[in-house]
Length: 211
Length: 121
Image 1 (cartoon, rainbow over the protein chains, first blue to last red):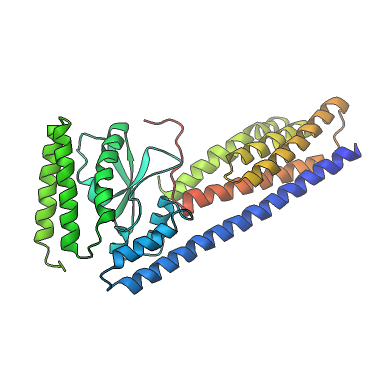
Image 2 (cartoon, each protein chain N blue to C red; image 1 turned 60 degrees about the vertical axis):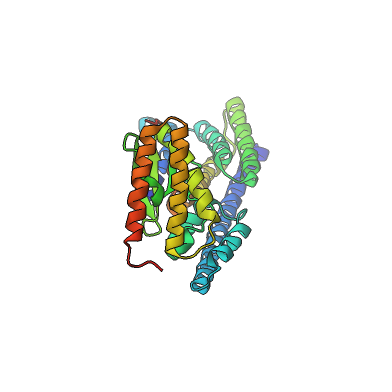
């Protein structure tokens, strides 16, 4: 009997050790993420006026690739209030949740190109509305996957810092997506993408705050 | 659902609902037997370990689970619980709830991940 008493008490002590360890991990990981967020914010402020800011910021993010997941980078950007231009440098702006595959973080630019017939719901917004958390059905998910693939490639590869050049790059990417949809026989979706693309580009052209 | 609602639902479903059997026993019988406590501690600790992201916790909780499973077998066979087994079971259940709650808090409140719904539309 004494052996089982000792074993039970030992198990309770092990449980307490596990609590201590989990508290330690919680504090260390939270601090580590906050430190990375502060470093990135500080770097973003330093690079604000640099013509190579996108390239240099992306280089820094590439080094963090293994340490911080794409989802957590968006959370950091939101928590530390990163400047708007840094949001478009993040490695992934279409991130599916790893706890629920119906949820995803999506760049708000992409949302306007999702047809109304696809079911999706905006649940939350991050980074002053630049990124939105949505819940979507399978059809919407497949469509956004294809759309995001085109936009993400263009967004990440452009080194230009001016809003004008950036809008031109996105316009080009959406034009390619429109052509892709036409080739696939989705002329209705292609029409919608074309219409929204023109609206977006005209709105950008008429924006007086262009640099 | 916002992040606190996600955490609340997750806490209710993942942490509190598995404890309903001993809660019901306490409510209906006025006390919880040592057998129920030890088997709950054994299953609850290993289920916490398997849902954890850390291998260290899995190993630790498997060891804890084996110990309580052995205690459960001993109580069944001898009908006399080892001393302090009751307190140790309570402490273990509480510690596992705390560990799991902390992980859920980090995932749902700090990292704003949604809680996986039971039934998807």
